Length: 68
Image (tube, rainbow, N blue to C red; front, side, top):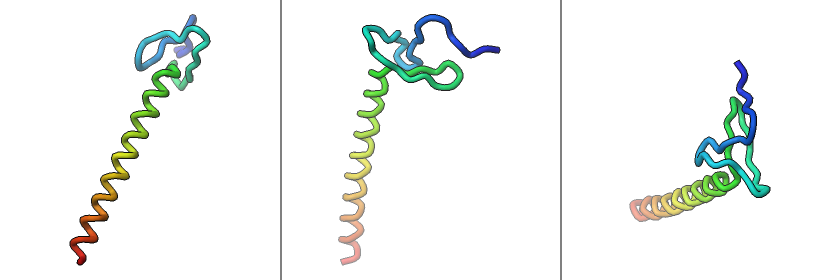
């Protein structure tokens, strides 16, 4: 069974077909992500990392206070 697609690839996340010179990334088994969804995922991951850093700082502060 072939996993290749004919014609323009559709983003597996937003279902848009890249146009106007926009790019995307092909993955295994006909998975494709457009550059806009890549950017959105990057923003989500950066925000999650920032939130984790803030949580860690708060935890370390509370831990220090309990030791005093």
